Length: 154
Image 1 (cartoon, helix red, strand yellow):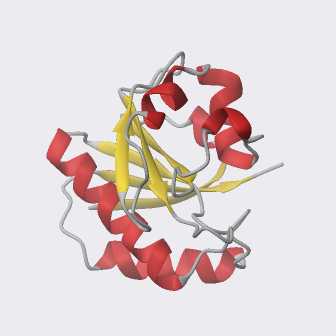
Image 2: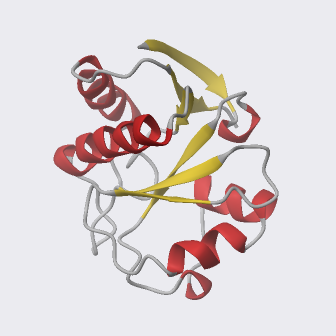
Image 3: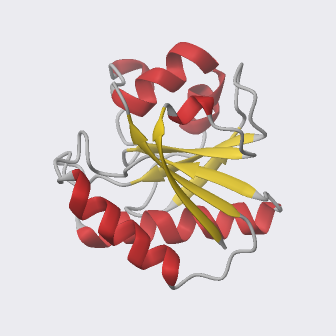
């Protein structure tokens, strides 16, 4: 695996797929006002990825599902349930989200993937700690592609 940590905008990365740090998908997406990564995806991709995401129903904490990329130039979007029903992320939910997103990307044959810091926004965890957990998880995975962790620059 080739790991790169960059500053910038997740949606500007030249990769096959991007990861959306989402929730358990219990509340209908149209009742939510997506913030951060999810908000940017909705603004740039349109509603098609979220309408498809709704068809998946509830997502177990730490699991990953794939949808189309809407108007974005990616092959797909991988949505991970990184926060629980109380809108809190945990070390385990973050690590499981990374592991399951990489597994799905590998299964689908994607050669590159970009992650935001899962659980560092709405999930309430400190960016530095999330980065450590994500790197620890990636170090233990076998993926023959390029992985970017994108540190959001305002």
